[in-house]
Image (cartoon, rainbow, N blue to C red; front, side, top):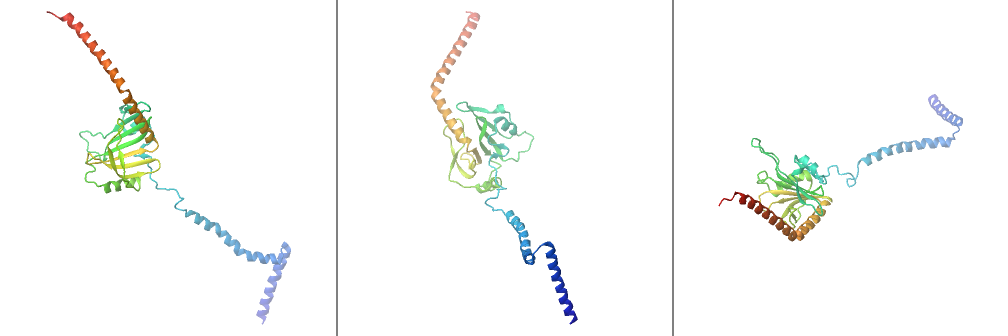
Length: 275
């Protein structure tokens, strides 16, 4: 009985102390009760930012950046749009080795690379036999790669696609043909596309040569290539249009050279002649 009375007195004392504390701080008992009830809500709200942060880290795959996106703006270290001296330097060539194909209405140049093998060196591991770089107004716009027939001997289309897809991503198998580039002719032999890797700006086309047992890769800039093709077609048209006049001029110069040679021989023989 004494224990029960003591417990009741303790409870009463605690309640009175609470009211006294509230009176001293100017807080109504109802407010104190409400603050006690709101405490779990405050604790729960404190956890909300942590849950939101955790959610934001799980980004939507469709909106996340493609960390492993393939770069089709270059073939090896050769970037589309680079000028001829820069490409020549990277390829270990002299810029003066480039051939001027057309000068009007645009400057079209070609630079050919092939591995240099000394007699005492072992065969290179690189499967590339030749690379032809093409420039439109001093900007790289197209690359034609020819693979060594012995380094690709026995390889199937599937083998080549698998090897190239490691670098360029998933390939498509379009029913299409590409023109193996020649800057000196309007029409060229076309090759069937074995596989293609492309985006909105660049196109990589694997083909199997019709005339040789080997593969090749045609790579071009979708922005620069049409401009170059238009300029080349116009240059060829202008050349054909001016061909008759050029032939007349060539013949005139040849006739003048022949007359000069005849006159020189006549003077020499006239002095030396002994009947």
